[in-house]
Image (cartoon, rainbow, N blue to C red; front, side, top):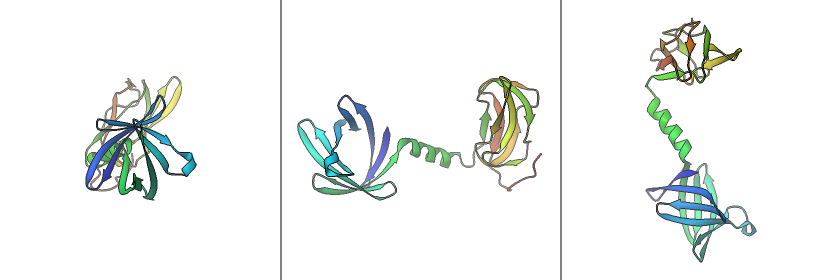
Length: 177
């Protein structure tokens, strides 16, 4: 798993993965073995640099920010998982941009529940898609205005086919269909 660690005004990408003898941590070109030292209590670790072993104590100060005691020196570090960072960045970048809702499976559109110009909320059903004799609701991933409806009742769609284009709703909620 990858993380972004920020400390003293600098950022470092850190990757933690399983190795043959436990966990491995990589930062840049440096990779070290990480062992949990359960005898010293929660938040206690040792980092192995070849034959050299360095004790580490980690205390959470507040959500995502930690006080780390490493080889006798204190460091304040904030940590964010790469997946959380990418999701947050995607949310920030996606604001104000239209997005396309696509079919996740092949099927037949049996009912269209939202029309062009309608306001939809995140999670609101947009249409019913029949696949393998089962009805599946396709829901909006975000709140916004339906800019385009790409299908109609009776349409056959393939996986990945565009169904709706949802954009920002500058005027608030519009009446439903």
